Length: 337
Image 1 (cartoon, rainbow, N blue to C red):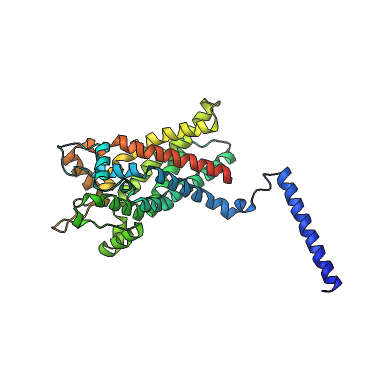
Image 2: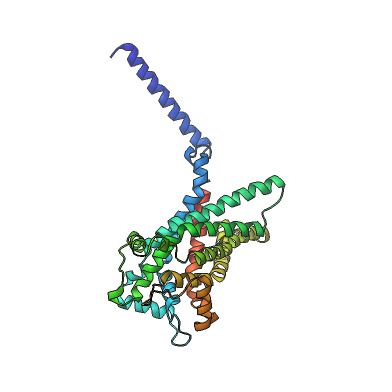
């Protein structure tokens, strides 16, 4: 090796060592500036609300999947019958475990996770993006974001996300309701992808969007209750209870949001479940022709209060999911901002 080549290598090594030392000193004296630059790229900042939302939703779903399973079975029990025994959440839980094993409560988890990866990624991502745009406009005009604007953002985010996430939602309902059929009639789906493939093959691609109309309405109602009231409650708590810690503020706002999300969305969730579960009878016809037909027949045959059957179970399913999702998403946003 020549002397000039050796000198160049030494000089390059010395320069690299100097840069490393300067970077280390910068990290010590200015840690905020030293954050990973990739998080601050425009494309990353645009994607982060969607990524954070999806991760938060999937984590929440893994926690509450057994409650969701019981909720679906409650909604499907006694279909078309106004009188008769009223099943309870505890009784349904016992039946599921007695017929199989505890892990049967996690039936459809893969579909639930896929749904969150698509639906919650979209709805929280859209809502956060809309909120950022509204905030920038409000600051420019010297005003504050109002409840109506937050409400419009929640409705729009929920509707857009529901259209994208409907196939996974349909697969989840089919997997959870499969155990209600006689053993010889069960589809015994192996996974969400098996369910999606078989439904599309046997019933057509369009069948994956069965119940899309009530799903969109339900998502808009749920997001109006959840995201709008979460953002509004956080703002109101900061104004009227300024001494609350950030953690207490998040927890209180998410609890309020969970209640309103449950109250507004349960009737639509009920109809959505009925429409997505239905199959053609021996006459080749479906029990319900659509959203309004299902609502009319439930009121006629089962009574209007049937829409709120299992509200306690639904609240226990929606509220913790909303709280976990919103709190985790908020912390992820804090970490990556």
